Image 1 (tube, rainbow, N blue to C red):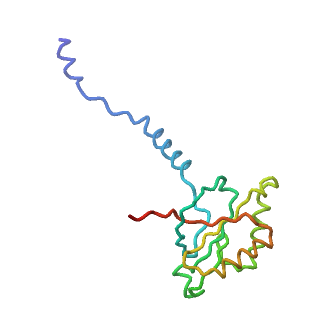
Image 2 (cartoon, helix red, strand yellow):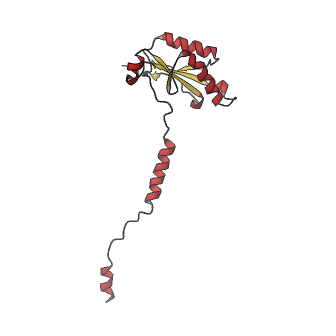
Image 3 (spheres, one colour):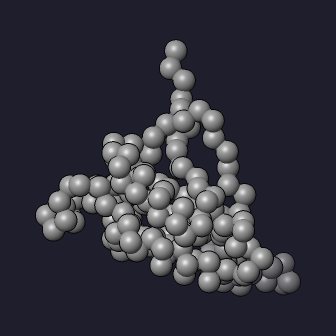
Length: 157
């Protein structure tokens, strides 16, 4: 009699989904931790020049970026195609660089100010005149630690 009862209970048990929310939250936290948000929306086109002697910046939190290049396609009708300076998310002039550097210095601790670097991201086809003007303005503000961003040159055979 008991032998017939065992045959009736041979159903497969349902799959447990208790661990599924844990897996989803673990993936969500991993993506949130490993992803960095872009801080600046580029409004200028930049194709960095190639270089052979490159060094990596150690503390990127102490780097202030100045972008120089022709405006993006959507801004060219309004601004033309001559190279422009971009500071943070807006176009600027050479005269605005002093205020930008001062505000960047005020945002950091006093001990970190001597370690700050100003990185110039300049399009490879930009003429040197606007770059020289930016460098002169940086010299007036005593921002003497300047870095030029570049891509690594790949050797051709």
